Length: 223
Length: 234
Image 1 (tube, rainbow over the protein chains, first blue to last red):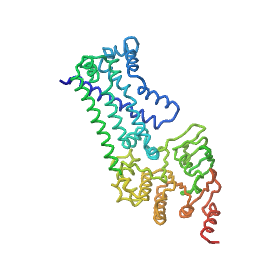
Image 2: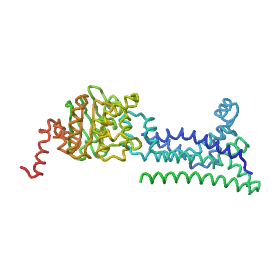
Image 3: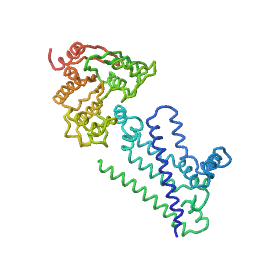
Image 4: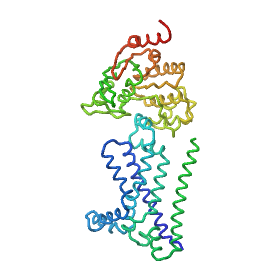
């Protein structure tokens, strides 16, 4: 029997995280591509850090930061009426940070590939930075935007270390499919683990095939 | 009136020019690598000089000493480069209307249609840039730049993909329209016939310096001699 609660929670977490990530990653990638200055190297390094940091380390830092031991954590708890750790909102924060490079990197690559003469043309025609992003960069880097959204979504669906450290295993609040799978294996319930793993695998495979298929069809249309 | 004194380095290349252009149409003539495109990018505000000033009708556009740099798009200056740089995801008409975001839709449409008519491209309005020839794309880029009614039009070999007859006809029609709308034009070219075709004031640019300036016959007398000799004349 499939645990639909864990399934819908995972999808909800991935959808909310992806929406927030795109809202952050689009302007961040635009600044990294269009901006000038050495500080951008620091910004890019910080945005890439979650890619190389072990998820448990990231989860631990967030757990400490959002917990009652720091003024920040206490402030957030006072504001929300409950601590951010071990809650769905806490998982969203952790997921956004953990999956940030998966949204930023494809967008940076896509934006950087747009012909700079088009950006010059837009600027000469009076477009400010946000109009350049929304009317030139995004339409011409649609594939990268799609890739950023799908990778962020799938990466969130499959995350484990951050979720476990920051959210624990609370049914309906923080128990995602990957946590469920871990529990099932720990309880030697391999039949249920098979089903959960198959859902995660199929989900990722179908989404990736859709991306590559879309890319190939688009490439053929432009050939 | 366009005035500038600019001093800037791009790697090993050093541009150091000081000019005052009062004529309606001025040609900057020079061989490849003389600094023509670099100069136009500085005038358009796309790049900043190491040192110098640019003013248009006594309005300061760039002044490095006083840290003034009016952004491109706010300098009443349009630039048409050799590469048309049309937005590939927009129709021809949407390209021409791109710079008219501040106008109402009806005015925007009317202006875009007027510009397409000026460059004899009304029939291309619904096409995508990928369906245009090189010459058509250059004409659309020109229409797009003029749609904002700039005070200064910078042309960087914008007719290179047009054949001689089409280019001369377009330049004649364009000159008349620009005069009507009091738009000053600076065109760079490495083709002396373009300079003669417009009968303009000419600045001869060599290795980042203005080597000669004046009416086309005077400024390009040596160039004319070279062309005549090349054609086998005396």
